[in-house]
Image (cartoon, rainbow, N blue to C red; front, top):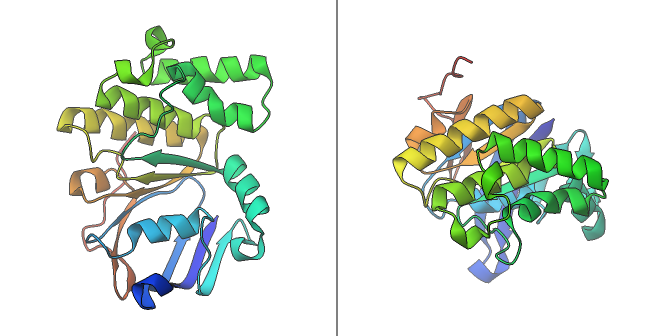
Length: 230
């Protein structure tokens, strides 16, 4: 589904510093992988490239055979809206919208009919255990609850790929465990692929495979996480 072939990226504002060098990766549909690495090594840059928010200086990045670098900005925006889901460390819920309206937002942007939208939102609210909080604002939730809403929002439109950037970085161990289990369960249920970027070895252990990003590229970790039994 996703293929990175010798991807490289540099930034002029950093004196042409090469952030990514010769990064290659193959991701099949429904696979869930974790990417680890030291701060500043380029993990966020890599996610931005996969999301089509930037284009590589060298190499190719293909999603279902489509070279994203050949799409213009508007086409990449439409592609992200339909195909990708995002989960961030800082949640990024819209504070003026209720929980259910935050979850419904990707569906509205994709033109989903009202009845189908309501059914999907209720399904996800049930899945994350927050149906009775549907009318609450994000500020009324705990950090763990907000991240569960963020997972639901990312999966609302049934994306083909979910990108999670340090989704448990602001959570305590118990809340982090709940969020990671929820993410894994929902990815499996929706038959979606996932890429988790994390500093946490505990979080990475929930993935099918673990990679380490270094200045020399992306390497499969020696501590490969075995897929957990259902």
